[in-house]
Image 1 (cartoon, helix red, strand yellow):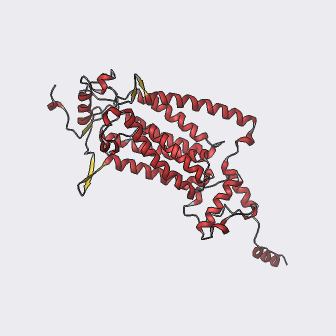
Image 2 (cartoon, one colour):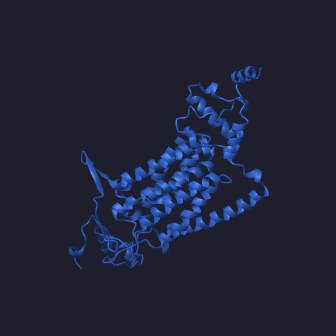
Image 3 (cartoon, rainbow, N blue to C red):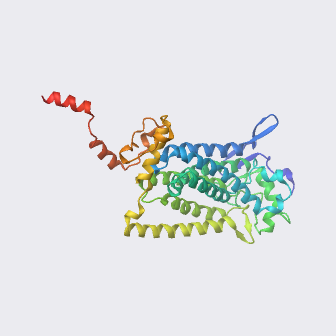
Length: 376
C-alpha cells in the first residue's frame, strides 16, 4: 500500500451520490493566525441557538436579563468541560503538553463533557441569580439541539467523527479519512488497539450527518412540544431520551469513540440517560395525574411574574428600589412595549387565558366618560 492511492488530503467524496468537495479546514489567516472552519461553525451554532432561546425565555417564566448570565457561564463551562473530558480520556497523549491541551481549533471536544460542564456551571450561576433550573433547562436544551445540529458540520470539514465501512448511499470518504484509518489500523494505533477493523479503501458512515439530522429534527419536535409541556423539566427529560437514543446507536458505528477498557463511554452513558429519562417521565406522569397542583408550571407562579416585571421596570429606567413590587396590584407583566425583544410570540399565559384577559379588560376613565355622554 502506498500513499499515492490516497485522495488529496482536503478532498471529501460521497461515491454513490457522485458528490466531491475540496475544503481546506483553515478558513482564512489573520496576522499569521489560522482561523479554522471548525471554530466558525461551532460559533455559528451557538449564536443561532442564542437567537432562538433568548426571545423565548418569558414563555418559560424566565427573566432573560438574569438568564443571560446563566447562559454565558454555561457556554464557558461547556467549552471547558468538553475539552477537559476529551483530554482526560486521552491523557497519555496530552500529559506534559499544555499547548496541545488548550488547542481546540482542530477539534477534540467531547459533547457529553460539554453538557456536563455547562449544566454544572450554569446551575451554580442560576442559584446565584435566582433563576429556576428546570424551566431554564427546558428552553436551553431546545437551543442546544439546534447548536449541536449545526456544530456537527465542523466534523465534516475536519473529516472526523466518522464510522466503520458501509455500502449505503450516504457512505463517504476523504483524503484525511483514508490517512487516519491507515495510521490507526497499524500496530499500536487506536483502531488496532480497540479491535476495530476498517478498510481505508472503502466508504465509511458519515456519523456527523446522522447526528446533525437527528438533532435538527429533535429541535423542531421539542420546539413544538414546548408549547404544550405539562410540568417544568419535561422538555429536558425528552431531550435526554431523544439524544440518548441517537447517540447510543451512532456511537456504536464510530471509530474514534473514547474507551474505558472495552466499553464505549459515550454509548454507555447514552444508554443510562435514555433509561433514566424514560423512568422519570413515567413517574412524573403518574404524579401529575394524582396531584396536578403539585406540578404547576413556574411560568404561572407569582414569583415568576414578579421577577419579570421588576426586570422590565429596570429597563424602563427605574431605580432598583422603585422597580421592586410591593403587592400583586403592581404586577404588569403583560405590558411588553418596553421589552428589547419582539414579544409578540412570548405568551406567558395559555392562549385561552390571554383571550379571556382581553375580554375582561376594563375601560379607562376617559373611555367611560365618552360612553356616558353618548348614552345621554
